[in-house]
Image (cartoon, rainbow, N blue to C red; front, side):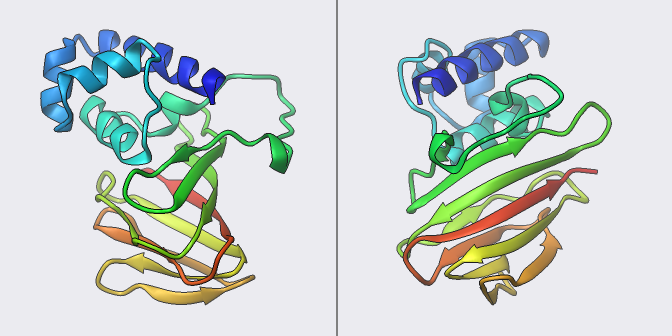
Length: 182
């Protein structure tokens, strides 16, 4: 997590400065504390999924712009080497597998979740769609108003520009999540 935390710190500062925002203004727009933004930029604290989504939204960039690392044309991520970003509110970890190249806005994640508090995601930009394939376990997934129970191998796509949820119904539930931002 230390390498990921350092990468996030550098990306957050770069994106904030490119947007011409002060730490205070970014914090205000994202509804997080100024101390949180400062500590994230200093790599002094571990971020949560919720905080990174809020900061990305405030900067007008996808979550992946803060966590994706650029690399070679071939990328291999072994399951035991994944470094994800945990949720503060629920037993949920999101690991970015592949960020979309410029002008091809899609991001792929592995989700690992256990029963507990539901993971609720704020609406993404207008037109966003998510695709989920459950790999193991069972989960209730989709828009907050119409979440559907899925089992291993099930696929669902749904609008992600409204509040949406991922609720693990079994321990060690895992899924592949693809987010399209239009």
